[in-house]
Image (cartoon, rainbow, N blue to C red; front, top):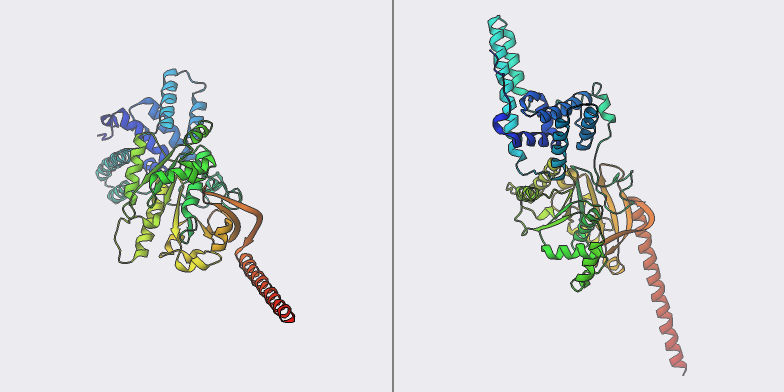
Amino acid sequence: MDLQQDITFADYGKSFQEKILQALISDKNWAAQMFEVAKVEYFELKYLRFLVDKYFEYYKKYHVFPTMQLLITIVRDCLREGNDIILRDQIVEFLHRIKTNPDMGDLQYVKDKSLDFCRKQALKEALESAVELIAVDKLDNVLGVIKEALTVGTTPSIGHDFMNDFDTRFIKINRNPVPTGLDKLDTKNILNGGLGNGEIGIITAPTGVGKSHFLVSLGANAIKLGKNVLHYTFELCETIVGIRYDSFLCDIPSSDVINSKNLIKSKYEKMKLGRLFIKEYPTGSATIMTLKTHIEKLALKGFVPDIIIIDYADIMRSTRKYDSLRHELKLIYEELRNLAMELNLPIWSASQANRQASNADIVGLENMSEAYGKAMIADVVLSLSRKPVEKAKGTARLFIAKNRAGRDGLVYNIGIDTSKSKFTIIDDNVLTFEESQNSTEKEMKNLLKSKWQQIGKNKDLQLLKIVEKKSK
């Protein structure tokens, strides 16, 4: 008896089978689960069988799944000398369709259903083998066959086999980083191009220093590079955030934007920009599930973000209630991490620094308000420190507090133009944390010295006036 005869995804229809392949390409962890249980024969359509076969064949050889672009190259090479024109046209049309108009809205349902289908077939095969083993009195092998069938498809992999998976360590990881726009940060030895897919970046600072402006600058720089940006705001309204983007992109002070409609429109007509969606939620109302639902709605309309900006995660609502705020905040950032990895894109957010940070020369990880656990989850933590005298001069210090991709502990002197949400590194000098502390102390001593000298001069001048007055 063959329980597997003529078993395919045919009952689910063509669209469902196409979405399985789309899910394989977009979710590498799920693809690894399907690799253990799915069979090419389950696909009813010839062009899908061909693509799945090449996709899994590459993974079997290199232990990593090909990107969409690489899959297209592999398929093109395989079909170059073939005579099946219909198959070639079907593959080209399908790949072009999912690349240019990815409909991600119902992929989770497809993933759940198709994985469940494949695991059930694996169990049926195991039961068939068990019957045959019983018939030949190999009872000791029955339990192993059933156990193996129950475990396949449950986890992406058993881990990295250091020697057998040697080659995988030398395959270039495709981070697809989105640059910050600050060239010295984006260098290879620091952020290596910017924040990468699945990574979390945090900008922390005391209130009023410029966190929201910094997030706008990150989003605006991404748009200039042709990236699609999704910006969530939980404090400012959508139009105010939009005006800040207008100000940055068109180099017009935000106070003048409202009276420069035609000028701004003419500037945009000459630019090639990515798309931007700004979505506002009331403070403390949005959870990760709220964002997921919104992202799925946008996907149905053909918008898939390349980067997400969240202003800011500290004032989101966690999906579980705790007695302690720090536990809720840690959960929010853990859920953000999962969202970044699930969508395979970078997420930037901001975090409020504590009261002690207001007078600190450098804002460190220890100054992150309420939950140090936020810093543990993030890949990159930048901080802004800016005293009142620096606000007047439009300067501040940017500190790389944490960086998984490269160097950290560096301090940059930066210029901030809050009228245009623009940030620039104003000199080539980069200091370590210790050098910055010494420099700050030296500046303070010089300032005090000049004050005392000024006071001394004033006293001498007053004394001279008294003497002159008495002599008369």
